Structures are given as structure tokens and as C-alpha cells.
Length: 411
Ligand SMILES: Nc1ncnc2c1ncn2[C@@H]1O[C@H](COP(=O)(O)OP(=O)(O)OP(=O)(O)O)[C@@H](O)[C@H]1O
Ligand SMILES: [Mg+2]
Image (tube, rainbow, N blue to C red; front, side, top):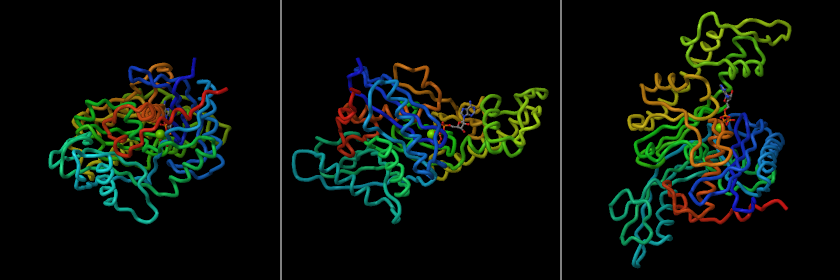
């Protein structure tokens, strides 16, 4: 039965590796056949710090998904994140070559001229780029200029840069785990593919993915990506705060947070307690749950206020009419939406769960899976040779690849 065209996405996160294998359906949705969620190893804040551990963890996640889908993947879309990431919007321009209409070659020349404008210190490289829009003879807002008559073509490009060695290390780990990297995708862009609607992108929306080591940001405006960034604070910091202040092991603090954590202390009764094991292993104590929430709240407030200043600095904060979409494991803390809205000037906030999928929908409905699903959705969109998406990536790089053919059904 499973001999169709399979696509795969791998989210190499700080706390977990998530591999999603799916099959594009004729209605445009992705049917998910395999999900491999395994604990991460060898990563800190999105950066590989132990190669062997990271390779082993990626391999385990891929194998788990392959087992479930009963296929073997050779290539995948892989997510990239970390505090080393920064983004810039640049414009490029070219005179259209003589002929009846704008050609793919003209588009490539305009894009190259935009790329040339990206400030790149020696150790940095462009790791992801998205066309925001084309302008044809002064007429802005064009998404597909090929075939139009014109003299001049301008392009606005969103370029994400990162530290070259960090990105190369990530790719080499995936390859050494047996999976070729078809495309590296900035994680918040992949996440947005899964959880943000087209209407929200048009109106202006902020995606915040609260992971373990970082909180990733993507801002969309007028239908396309306008800003991406990463804040070096995530759920692990909250766990560490709980661990230090209550003198618990990291694992005990993590359990306490995930089971009883809450973003708003004033929603917890004063007499609610829970028994925990102290780090010395001998005593067990009753901890007031309100106290746990009092530890959580300021870290989350700090995170959202750093997000706020980051987006303000980019000059985009006033344009987020559709509000905020949260994803990532950190978004699972009860009432995080309320706290986010409080810090972010009462903008509407919702937790996003993956859309555009069938099969195993319940399994991947948690915000923890959003990035992996988004990567597989992007792989399906591009691998299936679909029309260029709203981000224009296919036209952009001419990378219309029937690459899923290289993902072989297991013998
Ligand atoms: N039920 C829960 N309540 C509170 N926090 C949770 C819950 N489930 C998971 N988390 C937190 O979510 C974080 C992990 O989220 P996620 O899986 O999105 O991160 P990641 O992708 O591995 O990390 P990163 O994106 O930073 O590389 C951890 O800090 C974890 O404690
Ligand atoms: Mg993540």
C-alpha cells in the first residue's frame, strides 16, 4: 500500500528530535504515516555540541518514523535554528533581457543582485531565503513575474544568515545519520507552514515557538515573511529556575513543571501542594503549586518582553493585526496565552496546532510537533512540484525537485 511518494522532515530540537514521514494527497493535504519522537542529545540552544550524541539521536528518531511508516528515507528537509541566526530584508534589481517577457534567468539575476546586498561577515552565510515580492516596472506585489512583459524587475528578499560552521555541522550530523539534507529550512518558517493561516499572514501575525533552548520568532506581513529571529531563552530555563530555587534535580523539576506548572500564579489556590523529591534524594517535601507558578511567570514574562522588543526593533510590532500564534512545548503551560497577551499589549493569542494534514492527526496535534510537520509540509509542497507557494521559494531558486523519488520504499 505504501508505495507512493514519501516526503520527510526532521526537526533537530534541543530537547527532542522529531521526524515526520508523509505522503502528499491529491487534495493538497499531507497524510502522515510515520512519527519518530526521541530525546535529543548533543545540542545546546539549537547548536551541536557533541557530534556523536547528535548523530545517534537523529538516527534513533529517523528509525522510529521509518519503522512506523514502513519506508526508508534517504533525504529530508531539516530545520535550522539557534541564537546565531539573524535576518534582513534586501532588494535587488535587474534590467529584463531583450525578448518578449521576463524569463527565469531574469528572475535569478534579480535575486542574485539582492543576495549581493546581504551583509555577510566572513564566518556567516545565507542559510535560508524567501522572496517577499517582485516589482515589475514599478508595479509592486507581483508573486510570479515570469512571462510578464517588462523592462525592469525588482525583488524584495528575506535573507536569513547564520554561522557557517554551525550550519555545516548540523548538515553533516544528518548525513552521518544516513539522511541527505534536501533543504535546510529556518525552523520558525517551517513551524508557520504548519500552524499559521493565509489570512493571518495577510493581516500581519507573529509566531513564537517556545522550544527547550530558544524561543523562535517569525513575523508575517502582507502574506509573506518579514522578520525572523531567535531569543536564547526556552522551557529549559524555566525548568532550571525551578530546579535551583526548589533544590530539585533537573528531571524532578521538569516533571513538576510539565505536570503541575501554570503561567499565572493568581489562578492557583494557596493551599494546593504537591510532594517532590529533593536533589539530596532523602527528603520529600510539599511544594505549594502557587510558588511553582511564581517561578514560571517571570521567565515567561521576560521571554515575551524580549520578543516584543525584538519585533519593535524590526519596526514591525504595530503591524501584527492578527495577533500572536504560539507553538513549541513551552506553549503547553496552562494560560501561557493569557500571560503572552498581557505582555504583548493585549494582542489576541492562540496556540497553533498543525493544519493541512490527515492520518495520525491526534498524535501530532501537540505544539511540540509543529516544526516537524511544517518541514514535511514544505517538502511535500516543493517535492510534489506544486505551484510556487506564497513564499515564492520554488520560483526563487528553480529548485523544483521530484526528490521524493529518492525516498525508497523498504524492500
Ligand atoms: N506539558 C508541558 N508543560 C510545560 N512545558 C512543557 C510541556 N511539555 C513540554 N514542555 C517544555 O517544552 C520544551 C520543549 O519544547 P520543544 O519540543 O518545542 O523544544 P525543542 O524543539 O526540542 O527545542 P528548540 O526548539 O529550542 O531547539 C521543554 O522545555 C519542555 O519542558
Ligand atoms: Mg523546536
